[in-house]
Amino acid sequence: MRGPSRREMLASALWGTAAMALGTGGTAAHADPARPPARLRAGDMTTRRRVGDMTTGRRAGDMTTRRRVGDMTTAQWAAFVRAVRALKARGTYDALVGTYADGFAATHANGYFLPWQRRYLLHFERELRRVDPAVSVPYWDWPLDGRAPARSAVLSKEYFGGNGSAARDHAVIDGAFAGWTAKIPRTHPLRRSYADGETIPAWGTPEVIANMLKNPSFQVFNMQLEIHIGAVQMGIGGDLAQPAAPNDPLYWVVACFGDLLWHMWRSRHPGAPIRSAYGNVTEESRLPRYGDTVAGVLDIEKLGYHYDGAWPRTR
Image (cartoon, rainbow, N blue to C red; front, top):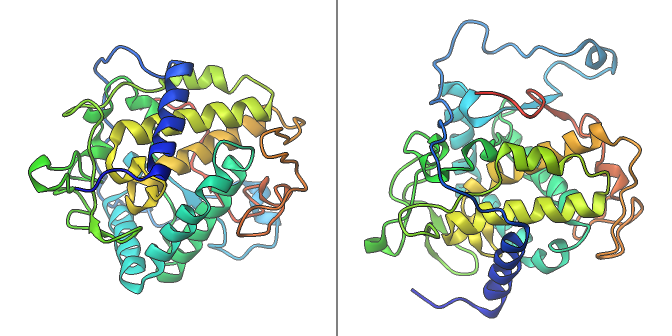
């Protein structure tokens, strides 16, 4: 297995040092895992909308609902996996990974992190919906598993699979993406390598994240959330800890929860300006690669999606 590049070492130093500085670790304790996929029940195919959404002139089905991984039915989870694999077969998936890797330096450790990630997730979701219009990006409520991440059902064979096999170049050998081949920056098996060997260091718990949501400064919130997401990615390791993190499909559900948290933060601080001295980002700034203004990605319902509930939620 090759040694890390200078850029990969920079990413590791950025996330690792910052996570230590903010104290994202903690004492490992039992955390109940997310539920396994539910069986399809009568009525599961119906999307209930708020009254306010019914008057916008949208056609039925235009508003996408993003769901928590553990709340998806078996059919919804299977459809998501099929759509991701279809994008992989078409070459679209690896092109998306390349977009992320090429823009890593411009979109991390500055005020573009959350706005750009939102636009990037939307890009991915729109590609998924070209395959299957019923599919949306799910999210992993990773703070609920923050005290004992390796025990999360999201990392079980029912979902994304767990740690890579040390005997097989840390390749992921179970879960929906077992046998997945990453191609950025070069071809290799999908890898995971937990930071503590067979386990993952504790990361931000619901209490820590809830406290973070209280801060009305976008600059501070954006920086802190990037650090917490970085702690998740570095803890799981392998491809997820590299500047081409979406090589691991697990990236999307980690990032999607970050987007939900930003939505929750904005709902609590609706008048807070979106400004950051890091990158000189304002609402008029244009997102790298996409060209949308930051202001253009602030309203998720105008972008065509919403979440299945507010956070925090109980199991």
